Structure formats: structure tokens, C-alpha cells
Image (tube, rainbow, N blue to C red; front, side, top):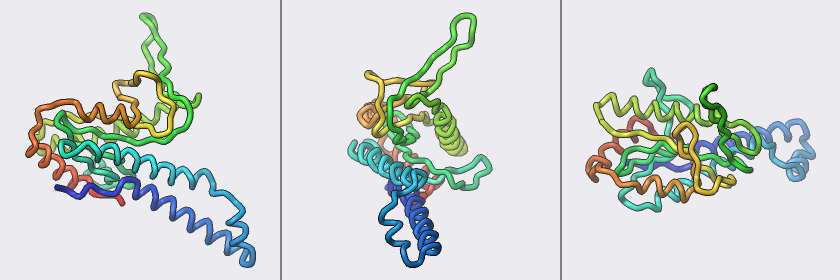
Length: 222
């Protein structure tokens, strides 16, 4: 079996890098009182969000890994660009199931999530992903890029495997009964496990081969 990777490792590393850089700056500016200033001040939100993201990724990975041998989870993988080179952005979770491959992007936004729809027979139909009153539809763009990258790598070797994307939210107030936007499921961890348990016709050997190939093409980021 391929190395599953450490969920949240790259996000945690970025958090730790920012903490160390801030500490170095404060101590350089205030050699005598730097430690006191750091002890009495909070982390900037721009730093704290990385640790929050890492915790969310670990929580989603635990839900995936608890599903047993029928599901293979690959966590914190480097994204491969269309030119074949690896890039800095990562894929939070690649999950190989009997029904195909799921690309799962973990999110830790706080507040209420809703999908706002507009349009009728006179106007084009539109959907917007809104969290805490703010338009967060850009999250779909990032996921679409990841799904396209995974699909392209499987097509390179002629693997006819369905690839789908899902946004999995941790600590977000989700609509009762679930929701989708642009065909993308918006789920919590329980909803994600239901998606990953869907039946399919990929045999154990096929799932192992797909997981090994994806692990090679999308190496661990952490």
C-alpha cells in the first residue's frame, strides 16, 4: 500500500514557520522585552488560520481512515500542474473507493453556510456559496483545479475511473439534509463518510493500483 501521508502537515509547517518568523522579528526589535511581548499578545489571525486548517484536515483524515480497508486515503498531497510539474498548492485528501476517486478539500470556516440561487426562465440560473454572509464561491474554483489535475493524470494512463470533488466542512453550520452547489457536495464528516461508502464496481486490486499510481503522481506535501 502507498504511504498515506500526514494530514495537515504542510499547513502545520506553514503555521510554525510564521510563528518562528514573528518571534524572531519581535525579539530583534525588543531584545529585553521580546519574550514578555510575545507572551501577552495573540497570534495574528493570518497565522492562526493555518493551524486551524491543519486541525480540520486531520479531523477529515480520521473520518476517512476509519472507513476500513475498502477505502484508501491519501492525505496532504502536492498538486501537479498541467505542464507536469509539482506546485506549492496541495490536495488535502485523495480517496480511492469502490465507486471511484474523491478529491476532498477540507474547510474550517465558522458560521452558517448556505447556497443562494437566482434566475428563472428569463434569466440564467446562478448559484453562490455563501458562508457567514460572505460569498465563498472561489472555494469551488480551487477544488475544480484539483479534480482536473487528478482526472488528467488518470487519463494519461487510460484509466477509466470516475473522479469527483467534495468540500468537507469542520466547525461550519451546514444546512439540514445536505446541500450541493454546481454539482459539488457540501458536507460535514458524517456526510463525507456516506459519500465514500457508496457502492461501486472497482475491485480491491484495481483500487490498490489506482491508489499507488496517484500516490506516485501526487507525492506527500508534508
